[in-house]
Length: 187
Image (cartoon, rainbow, N blue to C red; front, side, top):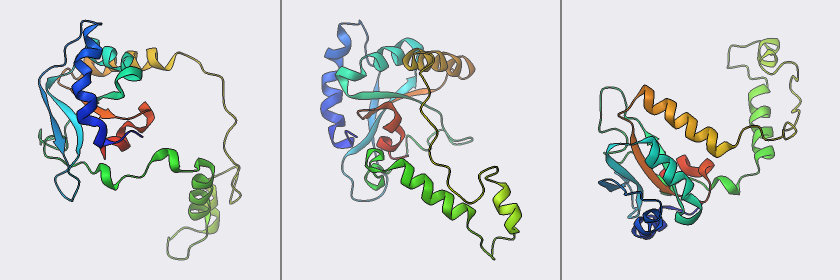
């Protein structure tokens, strides 16, 4: 995870990285955590709506820019939350790459399937949730071959999302992988 401390430097270099593609970053601003000691920005947020073309260009430029684009919606009834008012805590997030996914999932499985007298579920009801495996952790599934190109699929999803809500805004976070973008933003 690149981290929010890299965000200002990467943003400064972004216009040059996008210039070759003829893309201009719209007006926007850095958003900082509303609480705590973190003096680094959590993310950059556009002032206006995102476009498919801009999101796609930013996603394509990620390898060079180190910035991953996000589509941002606000909480119902409050257009300032969570992005404009800093309800983001990147310093409180752990690095997703530092976790052993199998060990984490096995621990959650054990916690969830353990019989607990205080949860109002019978042992049979508790184990039915994980049927047909029961209390024994089955391990992670075997990897499957890739289907569609994930970048093209992401571009298609963005098109659908923006068609449904053209007011979605653009966010940028400094991260090496798109899968870590929500954590990098501190959300």
